Image (cartoon, rainbow, N blue to C red; front, side):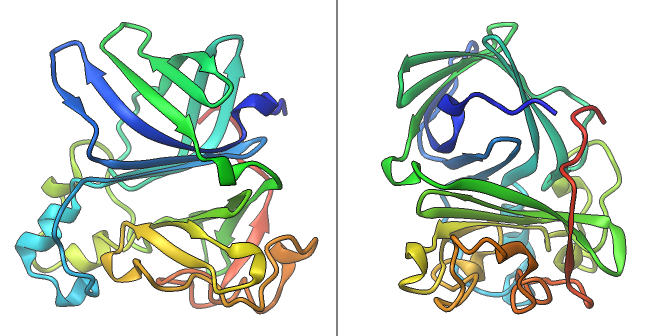
Length: 258
């Protein structure tokens, strides 16, 4: 399977999205981590939600979490066309393609334009994301339908894990949840942060789970550059806030086409 060009690797932070309708957004925290094949993308709107477990949030606060976005999968680049094949998604599967025309304004500044010109986005690469760049696709040992990945680029990581309770396709997440099922349906984790080269715990900076911000994904004893990181028996059993009962196993990268 073809790898994406070296120029795309690292963590890209979105600075602006401008829609043809006139609507724009520069406030949502958006991070796209790209490895040679796998990617993950996290989008957290500005809010004042407390850093509490899902169970401790009010139903109104849980509804606010429904505005988050996040997805992971494999990236395909053909000339100036980039397509992100989503294999897990925080929102219900829509069937729509995630594809854009890319232009490098500089090596560290990337412009993405919709094929129908309905929007454009400005992305800037985080300097500390250059360096070792790799990722591993994961599957729950006790549930083949539950997917995840751990991606690293320079000093950054992004861990993604689908929810234990799948969503039905179509619509918006807010349409799926109720006071009875919201905790289960919001338990999709995308956590982004820095690993400090193993000199300190892997600290989460932002996450789809509010209680994760400021917490640690992994302890400092886990070397992010270790060759056997993804086979480490101290990592795979308990990775993530809603880890599978029997832990994760490593899987080949998903295919591009759904």
